[in-house]
Length: 161
Ligand code: FES
Image (cartoon, rainbow, N blue to C red):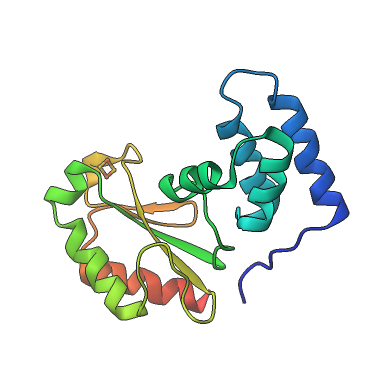
């Protein structure tokens, strides 16, 4: 199953400390949200409300930022994250076709978890390995020269691990 989201006294304190450390600096929202993502593994409305109370920034504005940037998530991620690079070099070499096939296989859209919370699917931006485009990742592992068949095989192998 996926990682569980929970607000405890401990992680709330950690977030408050993170906010305190950044609030007086210019442009505090992004670093605060990075802290929140690290601490909770996601930034749902409950966490956004804490950030809003402490910073005076509206929940609407915070939610806009959280939903805009792919490094932030509203829900806990699945156990493993599949990333398909849609940067230009990967895109022109067919990464959209790979992404579409994986979406269909897993029955989910980008940003969603499989029903069992085993995988989260993400469209990622260039990760600096364009030389082996198209590129996909599973968690920290990066794979190059991927096509639909290879992507399916890698995902199948990840399931077995
Ligand atoms: S565009 Fe995909 S790795 Fe650079």
